[in-house]
Length: 125
Image 1 (cartoon, rainbow, N blue to C red):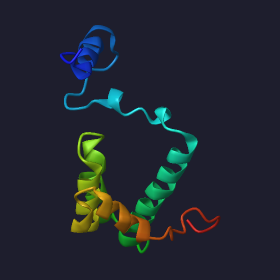
Image 2 (cartoon, helix red, strand yellow):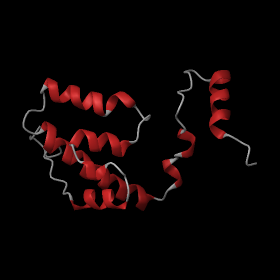
Image 3 (cartoon, rainbow, N blue to C red):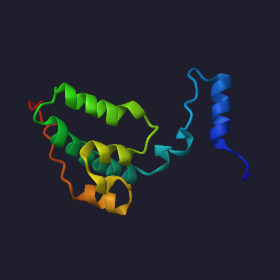
Image 4 (cartoon, rainbow, N blue to C red):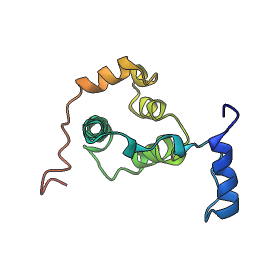
């Protein structure tokens, strides 16, 4: 039915049966990763790896335990949980306005990056 609101139904279910309260503004039920095939999740892993690599190189590679940088990461990325547009968060964190839209141009920009972190190499962290 066009009147059905799955988010409102989920919020009611959380109130009735949930162990934790519903978080307003979220709709995780619309974002099931398992509905996609392995290929899609594999390539999204590589895409996310490119973003993580860029964050590592730009913010943490030279001083991984820097308190100011860690606080910045916490305030720009972690504090929102899943409640803010990830493209805007990464754009702000990296001072990369070209990523803010999260559109095809943003994806193409990330696609040009390389996965150059050294975190995954044994003995390098």
